Image (tube, rainbow, N blue to C red; front, side, top):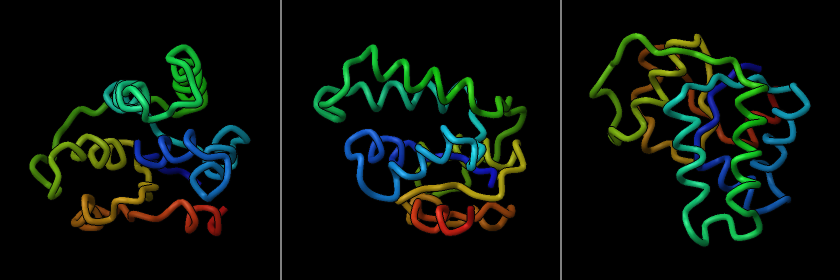
Length: 135
């Protein structure tokens, strides 16, 4: 499976070792799910996960290590075009544009509302649990 991992799934995976989000992260580490990553999304991962109290079990250094490992495992994709505005939440347009540029058929997310309209360009939003059933 090839997908883009939305930041909310990474946060959920780091906050709890149970649940589908954590299992998706483990599948990425095991290379059963291949992810596309851009510079802007990697920076978002680190910035959001480093917010005080959001991932209390990890230090800033540990969060950087997680993001570094994801960068090493991911398909690095440059985005040379924009489709903005395309989504209801403009902050998610860069995630959608990454999926389109990389040819990733899926965005793994828990925020379906924010990605309404992504299917118009062939990108399907799926939950972490659905991603697990597809691998």
